[in-house]
Image (cartoon, rainbow, N blue to C red):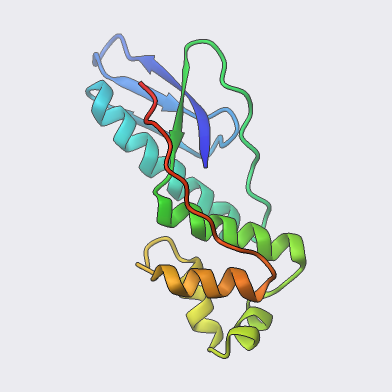
Length: 143
């Protein structure tokens, strides 16, 4: 789950300001390029939770344009955001997923909460309960 981001050098501070055209709520900055990337990852993750908390579809990433770079979220957060999207697509509410999993709705809330360190087997069970399979892949890191 990656989104294109603009990294613009701030002439006054010498750092970078980072914005996401597809996720306008995600704006951050960093004093160095490395810090700006870390801050961008955190800002993106947090901004995407605004959509889940408002019960809205997550924005679709647009194309990577010249001068931009892709920024992603952690693998665990990606799985949680994908579960959220799959539930919305299937029209399954938290209460229904809890019933299918034989757990309480608060446990489903934790599965969707990016601050909670959910276990992979619980996420796999949640995907299976809505007719999906969680898959993990490894890709080369972009330069």
